[in-house]
Length: 131
Length: 139
Image 1 (cartoon, helix red, strand yellow):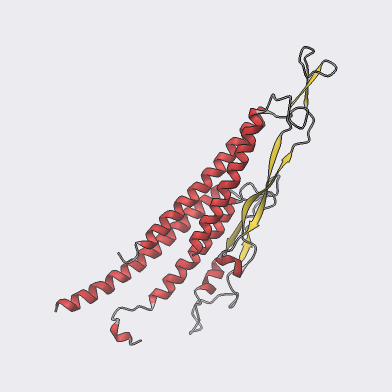
Image 2: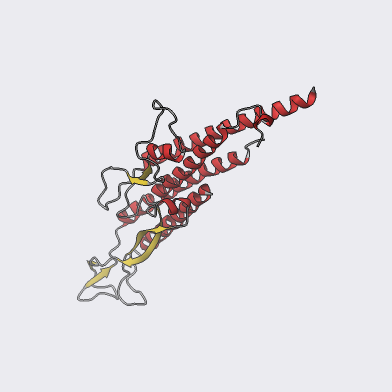
């Protein structure tokens, strides 16, 4: 594609989309935790931030750039180390609801980013038309 | 779309919690039933929850993410309550066996089930907002 057609730097889009995708997947993990609040033997799960960096596929082109310590492996779940109750269930409703709200807000923030980018593009297109 | 799979997990949770509520409710209703089709007093029932795997995006990356379902309804084998009541038609040696249902236990069960149900509803609410706002992108 001839990038000159897009005066705005559209390369930010994939990063935002990846982040949205990751947030949606994390939401799935958090929802599963809430759902299993009464399941005996269930332990709280989460996806780590290091995994997220891999998911964004950040590549270091410079030695000073941030890199993922775990290499290129796919994103994976880990068990959150909290004390289990008498039924060996370690889900804390407070933690899950807070994380759900935070994660949801993060997703909405990403949507704002995308919307702003589109708005900028549209403005560029329309203003060009006017001339 | 992973948001919809997340919604399916919550829906599974709603089903399981409602089942648990129903069982506690039926126990409560039958707390004084001394005659059942199987014979003898009513025996308290309990639900057993188990994790269930589902088809989500995470499934490909890691098979450990799980939803919930009711594995089955089991009988509580604790002893019946024996009450001295010689005039009762079901009395054996002047004692009547009443169900092993404790009102406080069932009330606790119902409250816990309805709180867990609400938690799942709240999770679905957040998901709905996220999906709706996604549909608004570019408007």
